[in-house]
Amino acid sequence: MRKHRFNSTTSALKLSILIGLFCLTSLTAQTANAAKEVALTAAEQKWVEQHPQVLLGGESDWPPFDFVNKEGIYSGIASDYLTLISQKTGLNFSLSIDKWSNLLDKIKAREIDVLGAAYFTEERQQFVNFSSPYLNVLDYFFIRDDLNVTTLESLNGKRLAIPDGYANIGRLKKHFPNIKIITVSSFDEAIDAVIENRADMLFDAYPTVSYALKSLAINSIIPFKSARKLGTSPLHIITRKDAPELASIIEKGLAAITEEEKRTIYNRWVTSPPNSKQKLVQLTVAE
Image (cartoon, helix red, strand yellow):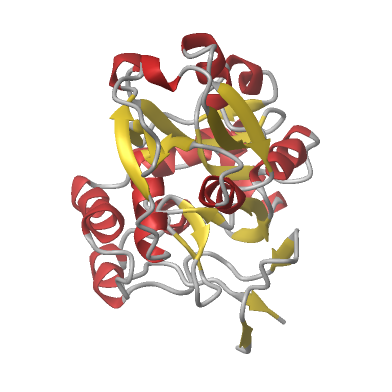
């Protein structure tokens, strides 16, 4: 199969590669007998047969959860979980990469079927089904290192860059109403806004910001304070509202993932450094 690098300037690439075809050898040995191990109802099996490809929306820049790496490979915790779900249920996924706000619009318009990593909001519940959470993450403020602040209260009046459509916008407006929100098109642009002094700080999952800064060798943005008082943010797989069978199949596949498999994924992406060569799924733009 011929492969090409992912072009980050292309905004909605559809890949007809099936998740689960490219697996890390060590994990394949653990899960070789896991394919189609989930018992589906007749209605669910019929849905799978009628939908030979399920369109998965992926982000380009939300590491280590959902992103495209430097080699143009779709990677991260979400893609690893979905690979295992594919193996266990028989679902086949084709991939469309886009920025987060566009992905939300597409699943709302029923142009894509699944998003692999999403926070819960009541607004989103109107147009998607949420899986059980598969990971809890802590959101954290990261500030430019020349910012003279010592407490969360001292962030009042400061500028925070955050991608459009992020669930944390609502949380910030509710719990930190005096922080100035600057919406941008992507997580990468949020980082640029802080570096270029168009904003003062970021607020996102700690692993996301830490992973990205290490990958880019950026040391002028540093961790400041957590939002622990707000609780952690559960991570869900979401599916289009009009496909309850798909939601049920995803839920069964998620429940079938073993603790050992979960630890393998966690250790790969959270414990290992950003330049780790270990990957479960390797999707690229393909002809």
